[in-house]
Image 1 (spheres, rainbow, N blue to C red):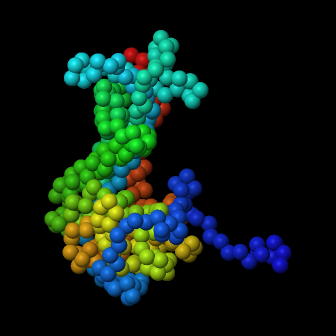
Image 2 (cartoon, one colour; image 1 turned 135 degrees about the horizontal axis):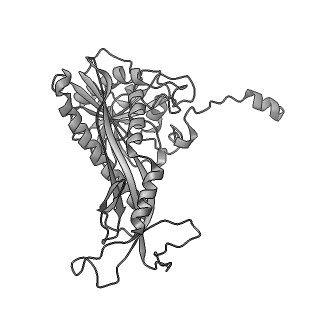
Image 3 (cartoon, helix red, strand yellow; image 1 turned 30 degrees about the vertical axis):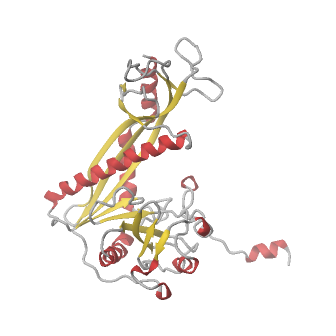
Length: 364
């Protein structure tokens, strides 16, 4: 058989996701050995009885609250370190900063002298908000908040005031075993998570005037539920997959899910515990894991409550799935979340103006 004939028989599917976001499935079918998660599969069904579960009749929540956050690094800066003997507790030395120069240039003082002892830091903007979907008002922005921060391990760091707002200093303990960029990025993500919890809490307070009975709402967090499992009636919504957590035979079953079907609920433990299940959103037939999302809820709720949340997510979330010709991350990027992301990025401000404000501040 010629190469051309072989090629004519090859079947393939194009991943609908925008390549700049990676893939909706990143090694999910190959990294089984890499997963160290402790999985308890018999929460809803015994492993031998695992099968796709069809939607069931459930009572709709009074409102669905979608929570998301965005972040953007405005500049990498260098903070000059004071000479030994001039540290906090003896004498406070205000930090001087330099905006990172092109790779060929060394960070330099205003007099042109090379900075020999400076630590890299991040100036970033981040925002979080909540979209409420309720019968009386439809989908609408409920709460939003944004902040700017300076993330560093430099103990002499101070807040950086600019004409575009103040970058509040967050000093992270240094860890020589971890890459500095990763350490600072983690600190930024931690602050964003805290802001998401804050806006979610405020959103439930703001529901008072919406005619929604207390305790009848459902909170859907875009991303893992880590750090937010204490929020009642909350789901984590994971769009992409990097690791196969289930045993091979159960993992293979996920690819057989039809649109609207879900896997049985299982308990999963890594550095934290949670109930989890997989759900396929409505999508164009394609790759085995096309349209698959993972849902999470708290581990400390009864199994019956976790199964009830799974049934609710199965009946509710497919109606919010995005469409391929409108969203490059369809169907996983839910329509309310996509709209919220656009609004949050608008609140971050113009990156060119923010960069200019930082440069002015560094020169003053």
